Length: 172
Image (tube, rainbow, N blue to C red; front, side, top):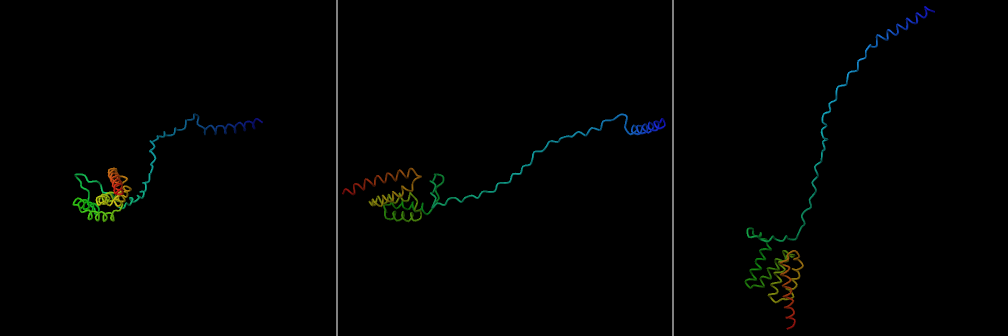
């Protein structure tokens, strides 16, 4: 048994020696990983699509835009209606009431929603002593002159004057 024991011990020593040679006596730590350097993270790129142009609505169509009031440095552009209105005023100033009325009616065919033209016709009809026609034209002017406070005041004064004339004419 000693020989056998000796054989086992020898084999065990050989095994242990073999293992000992493969294992280093002193273990070295594994190499440290390379330090990770974090570069600044760029901001995310946001792509914003260009807004599609919204279809613009066409400007509202008016029968005829009211001319801008003239200024001393910039007179109002001449239009057929403004030319006729000037002719109406010239005819009335010359005492030609029938010609002024005809020119007013011609201008009203071009621009039937012009309160100033209706007011001029009402003035002419009042001077012609056609009270009912003058009152009708003045009422039409009044319905169209909502945005012109001065013209509204003039029309109302004319309507009061026509009402007074109508009362005196009906009393005769």
